Amino acid sequence: MLFNLYPAHPATAKTRATFRGRLIGALSLLLCYPLLAATPPVPQTPSKQTPVAPAAPLTAATPAAALNTNKELALKIWTLTNGDKTLSHIKAGLGGSESQMSLSIDKSMAEKIIAVLNQAFDPVPAQIQGYVAEKANPEQLTAIIKWLESFYGKKVREAEAKSQIQYNDLERNVPLKEPKFSKEREALYKRYERVALEATNKIITETVEFYLVINNSTKPPTERIAPKELEQTLKLNRVKMQSLTQQLLPHLFAATYRDLIVDEVKVYVDFLETPAGQSYLQLNSDAYVHALRKTRPEVLLKLAGIFEDELAVLSPYSKETFSEAKQNQLMVTMLKRFGKAALVSAILEVRGGQITILRNNQEQEVFGRPNQDFITVNTLMKDMRKAKLDIRRYYQLVQKHARQG
Image (cartoon, rainbow, N blue to C red; front, top):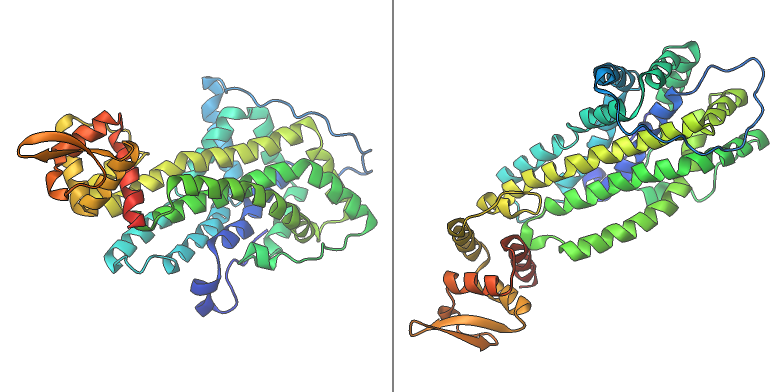
């Protein structure tokens, strides 16, 4: 199912469309293509509905002998299910960040940021395929490919390609009224919702979270949401996405399967209720979550490098260790970048208002805000050690106080 993720009037896209809405519009592609791929051929007579069985556990790891075969099979599934096109639709939403960039970002820096964003999803296909290859087994993957290349598999993929829904802003554009189903389709949707809601929500939530974190890092350090505030935003988002996914799901179901007859939809839902179908739902969503979580730190580190140059090594996503001399150098850079007031405020916070000064070549401990001329890089370093503060954590505090002015 392909989605039109852009508004009718391109001129308004930069001011009105939200990146989150664009991403969510495309997410059903990522979910629906692989799930439909696993549907068996339609039998001559509809099978009897069976109760939902517990999902079969995913394999802990695939033996090395089968891993290369699995990688080839996973790549073929990705190709047959238009995985690259799916990601390109999700990736298109990153363009919305260009219009949301801070006015303080100059053109050359903006171009560097856009270049990073354009490549943000590039590692995702390999991560997804690698996860599927490791967790699945060759028999399962071969069965999926057989279905994809079957008459009904092609029919399902063609039906998906015809469907287009515009979701530029999820909260505004999800219709208030649920779609009208026939009695038979309504019963099928209820069964579908039971097995597919969790996996759908997992994918949507993870992508929106990816956006929120990345978008925050496209802003200068002094304009970003503080880490604690960002974490709170992510927690609220996880709760909100559960409700929005539940609203979105029936519309996706209606649009995706409207060209399939009831018996065809029933066969698909029957499969999802089997242990194999539930395991595949889990594998699909887990592979996507795994890919984004592996990719996100790399993107954040690249963005840190654009904004902070030599201070990028203080990103929480960098693992570099520092000598005493290197820490002194970083302290000097922070001093030049943020000014002494922000560094002093950070020390006062962690030391409860106490700070070291240098007066008449003698070190003294005082409370409050002393003359900044009495504070040096050496005294700041000593106070950081007295507070048992890692320089990365100190850097975060300095950024916070710089934002607060």
